[in-house]
Amino acid sequence: MATGVKEKDAGSFLGGLRKKSGDAIALEVVAAAINESPSDPREWMTAAAKQRAEGTGMEDLTDEEMAAAQERIRAKREALGSRLEARTRASGDVRRARGLSH
Image: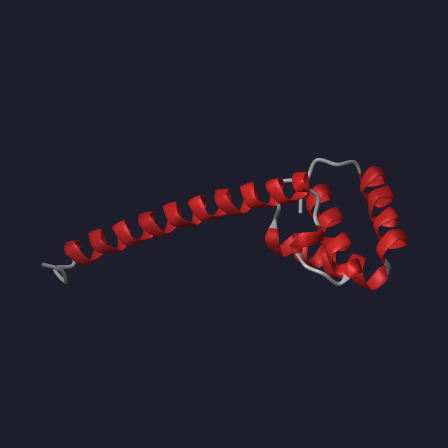
């Protein structure tokens, strides 16, 4: 996950995450962040580690964290919707070109 953060700063952040949340949660959060590719990995991992450490859901996030998470979800939904629409349109174009569609 390329974030433009210096290796030293990333190491310090991850060390702090391990200290606050423990090795297992830190590893889980890093793996999830790689999979999710959040726009702000530090913010995302901090919130995710807090959520996992407390063993509760999003209700424990601050208002700012919740608003940021909701905005990221909305943006991802829009992006996925646009990609799906483009694929559907392209699929129809291919089917028409092959004479498989009316």
